[in-house]
Image 1: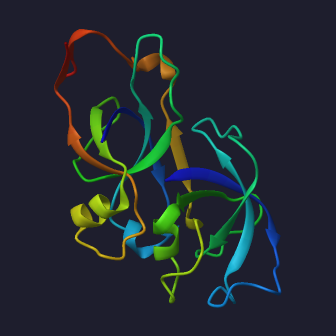
Image 2 (image 1 turned 60 degrees about the vertical axis):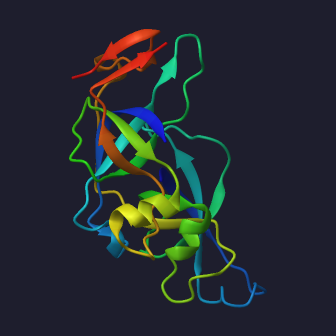
Length: 106
Length: 89
């Protein structure tokens, strides 16, 4: 799952059957520092998020599974949570590199 | 599955029902020396992992639904283990 920020909304009058009534939001995927990652995308909202909300999103088949009623619609990005709190420790606290030989963590 | 480090937490009170009562953790995948790091992402905790833990993450929806015992859970990434050590030959 990934973080994103709601930038706007989209309205489609002609849509694939079964997707009527699904609210489309324009979202900008974000990384842990809330910096944009990649281009804007369109997500189906199931939690009534508004513009500017930082949210949690899910991709691929799981996005279709998040739909309220009809589960199998052509949706590949769904907004499944509104983030109230995001706390991330600074990178300097961690070592993200694996070395040859034994890497003890315990 | 992939190896990653838990670096943060996400709290969502308003969210899809299948995310309730579960901790959401921000994770950064580990890489070998000289390799480019992958993007960080959010995983559902199923192993009581904490900040700084090195964890094993299953990034496939079917496995996630199996772990959560919920055939309709819209979850992809689940933390399925806490790693004590890794030995690379």
